[in-house]
Structure formats: C-alpha cells, structure tokens
View 1 (cartoon, rainbow, N blue to C red):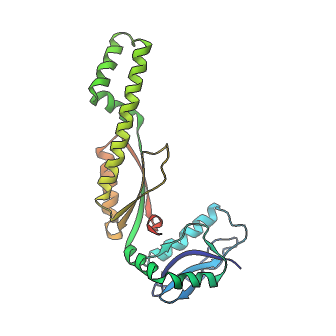
View 2: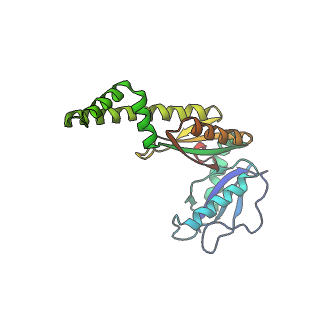
View 3: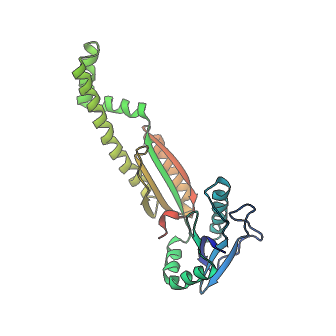
Amino acid sequence: MSTYVYGITRRSHPSLPEKMGGVGDPPRPVRIIEAGKLVALVSDAPEGLKPKRRDLLAHQSVLAEAGAAGAVLPMRFGGISPDDDAVTAVLGEREDHFLERLKVLDGRVEYNVKATHDEEAVLHQVLAEVPEVRALSEANRAEGGGSYERKLQLGEMVVAAVKQREVRDATLVEQVLGEVAENISHGPQSSGWLANISFLVDRERSELFVAAVQTLLREQPQLVLQLNGPLPPYSFVD
C-alpha cells in the first residue's frame, strides 16, 4: 500500500497524541517511520485522494500538532510515496540535509502576507500627490470634464501612477515586515495581488510581527493586507 507523508522531524521529537487521524474517510491512523536520527509522520494513503476540505484540514492538523512541539519539515498536501521502504530510504539518503533544515527552522513559523490596494484610497493619493495628475484633473474639471483626448490622457497618467505605487508599496511591505522576520520567500504572483510574500518568523516574535502588520495598515491606508499564520514553514523547505 502507498504511504502518505505529512512531514519529517527528529527522532527525539515528542510523540503525537494516540489515535490521531489523518487523511482519508475514515481517517487513516497517523504513525511514524524511523530511520537514523529522523522520523517521518505518515499514514496509509487512501485511494483516489483529492484536495477535499476534510483532507486538507486533516493534513494541516497533523502538522500543527507536531509543529507545536518542535521543528517539522512539512510536506505539501498530496505527498505520497510508493511504500514505507521508499520513505525509509529517502530519510537515510538525505539525513544530513534534513537535520540541517530542521536546525534552521527550530522555533520558527511562517506567516504569509498578500497585499493589494484600496482603489479609492490610492486614487485619492495619486490625485493629491502627483502634480501633473492633479493639474490635468483640475483643468478638465474647470472645462466641464475636458475633451475626449484630455480625459484619455488623464486616465493613462492615473494608471501609470497607480502602477508605480504598486511597485513602491510591494517593496514597502517586504522591507517593513522583513525587519521582523528571519527570512522571506516570494509566492506566485497574481494580477490580484501587488505582493504575495511568506515570512519566516521566530515564534517568540510572532506578536511583534502581527503588530508590525497592524502598524503598516494604520500608517498606509491605501494598503489592504491579508495575513495568514502562524503556519508550518512550507515556503522554507526544499
């Protein structure tokens, strides 16, 4: 039977609660595979596994429980190995690498921040702070709206100014929050976000990191920030 892998940790890591369930319906019991100084948190892999909400939450729950007691290298959802022997072989082959990564991640968690703009707030800033845009806007208004060409020119100037602010504010988010973090990882870019960044944060500085997000929101009203965490450090595991 195939083996579903949740994560990898040290052999000395505290045990998970008895009868902890993982993915599958009914939930497959979570167990460990030992090899040298490492263990893998695994269960039997259910057939036809799909990213349903119940299984995604089960995967997350196993990692959250294990991560609360120490560093774990988390696998993404859907990590399936041919069998237990294949897992044992990988643990043995890459023991030094896994131990090094566990050392780096000791006492650290991940926070993901996605940033976008409040459209009304950023437009207000552009009109107030960019002299050329403000002057053309006032001229058009004085002429009862302005000609088609002038309206088109104003629109193009506003779009360009907003794009400049997207770049500026993405850098601002990374710099300000990066000061409280130990490492950063850029996530996939999307047209819906001006920044998608994961931060590796010392668990003892979690409150400081969250406070930095709140301060950024208060001081930069044009920003909308979506904070997710603390999470297992998915973005910082090879």
